[in-house]
Image (cartoon, rainbow, N blue to C red; front, side, top):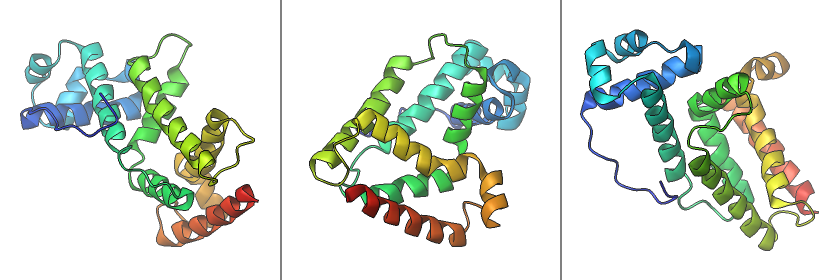
Length: 199
């Protein structure tokens, strides 16, 4: 996997349907709670076909996670060098598809400190985003007094919160984080924050 988009490998429709179903099952039940039978049912295929494409449950999980991060790497292409526009891109992704966030939350609940699946590839994904933060610091879009790693964590935490915890967003604002009303106000808020960061 690289940060550059690559032509996806050709797989039969059943393969992609199984991966999608596996991701949804993982988000709903955690890795330990995923059952091949449930994945097959959600994908609309028989259990035998799941085993034909994937050796076992662990193999299925690894391929599903790999597919998710391939999609995320593709999103790193051509990121804007304007921080407000970059925030717009991130916000659009978070509000449009929460699957990735929910997968990370599910993993966090089960994380016991052992080596993560595809850890090196995943680290590269975040390193590339930190490098984007460094470029924005050099361009004067972000303060240089904060390490780029910490700044990425700070900005990510700020941007992701309403979409990671939509119930709190609804309690506080009366709106779903994906609603036009919330997104309009949210964009105004983070653009004001960026003005403060540049001062």
